[in-house]
Length: 178
Image 1 (cartoon, helix red, strand yellow):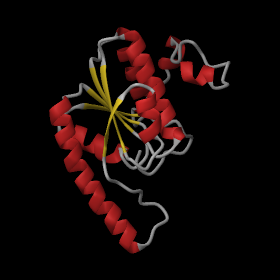
Image 2: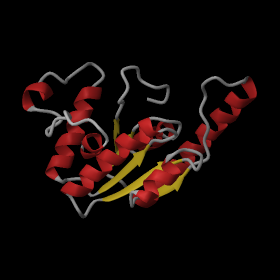
Image 3: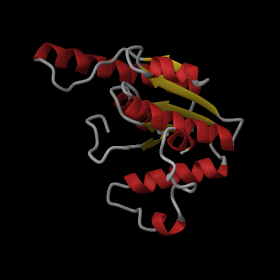
Image 4: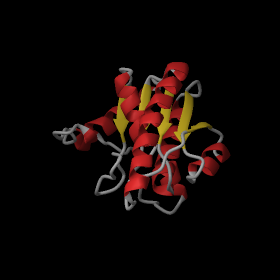
């Protein structure tokens, strides 16, 4: 939220999920409820190890950085690891913001020919395997996916490892990975 305010959204609420709003956030998919869970976890300062996966564009990275900043502000002991690609904007913004990042070799599925889609599918499978190794090493309590090609393998690997997962979708129409 601080980033939203700093970047021209002065009307952003100080408390993103007031009690009366949170009471109405239980949809069938639990997506809105999941966002409330993130907020409650951050507010309580309970999460010590978090992994945030998302990238490609500022629309995926900036919200991820805002969540990381808030987690760190509320709990200075939190360790946060980002996962992204070397080709996306996260390769520059995440280190500049003072967070560690690990990279996966991935490409998106959308708008591509058959060969590119097969390559992307192979990279996705390899990405899940690489994420399983990262999760085993880092042992996060929570994996947050914010969209982009890296979000899918990260969230799937976390689910397979029985790690809590949350998908943050900041668009009115969910992206293909979310």
